[in-house]
Length: 272
Image 1 (tube, helix red, strand yellow):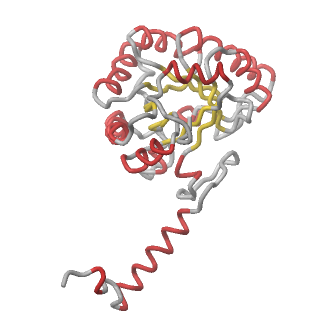
Image 2 (image 1 turned 90 degrees about the vertical axis):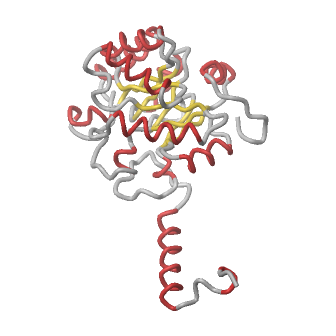
């Protein structure tokens, strides 16, 4: 779905159709208007307003402090920057765990107030009822299995999930359960590539991998990671396609130097 061909508005049916046709799906995180408009323009199918903004934008040590207000604020900005991409909003910690009713209410706010096209929530069988209620209410849902960052304290850190037979069986079963509940796609994070491929082959809905191998129907990365803008932590599965941290540092240093030595602003950048 890149700009080499005609880009149409990306919907849940388009995403499902891409799996059927064997077309890979691209997803990246987006947190503001400017970045969203660039990624929309070049043809990224899905923009995830991830609660990862807690770390790469707001400077927290984890995603746990991120609030509904934070997520709604950034989702609105991303929506304003998109014409074709599907905007998926992450449901933050404790916005859906307390009750099914609160989960549906908060999910609805992302569509009604922020203009998102879908929501994403972490978990398997334990959130199946919420997924079912959301989809019944007309709210498209992306599920998230494997390493679920909101449960990182319970996992004891950022570790690959599903390595032993029992854990792999549970993730596989959860994938079937959330598909039956009505999710139109599922993110698989930090699971062994053979397990991710097995899940992908068994589901009718698309899988989006992050640290889950090439066998998934699509891939997602945190945009700040793949552009080399965030250096506090870089997971093994991240490929850096640019080194913007160094570029920005060099540009700012040049600006400082030119202001200090009086070469900026010059005549070209002044009004006479």
